[in-house]
Image (cartoon, rainbow, N blue to C red; front, side, top):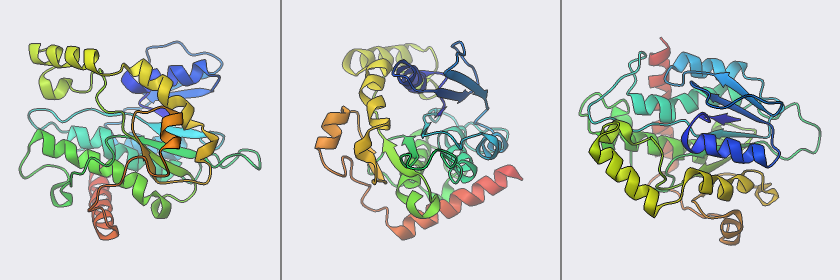
Length: 278
């Protein structure tokens, strides 16, 4: 299950998993491929918190092995809100994931045959980046700055992985940090189609790996038997062999994310989600 698999990295990963024999369901707004016996599509607007909650409660996840969250955007130069009055980047890139997981996590893989590997959730972001978000202004309503607002999503996604053991019992949770890759995610920040946007994406395309190359490197990790019995690990853009050879914790958690900070951040997130749904 690829939540956000209709474009960019999510689409590349979905196609690579499909090519390797997986049955894939893509969740998003605009499907750009054709459905097949092993590729299905579920429409969902993840800027809407009620849609995210519905997806988490109604998606038939009981036979799935892996759920991968890739849906995301970037904070715009000037603050943008969804119709739920949530800052747009936060809504799509983090809060929708929390909303989906509340209903999805306890059901993921629960009807598979006895002896099946523990189901896995992979959360894409920038784990171990070292920044602290602002749980007192999670929605960036007091003093909006694009990079500060985006940091709130980065922190939230790392916390989903670190807190999963207590918050979302059942699946194993892992973080993914692909680094710089040429996609459309920076359009909101740089100005979609602007000269600056084109120059930056051209440079990234020359210097960094493509979505397809990243997908070839990371898809084997999603199903790697070496991850059985592990949870809470966070991985960069290396290959499965490089990652697993590097030890149990390829990316270290952000240093100041102690249990008190994590609880405070999740409490603020829960409060904002409740407000959005009301």
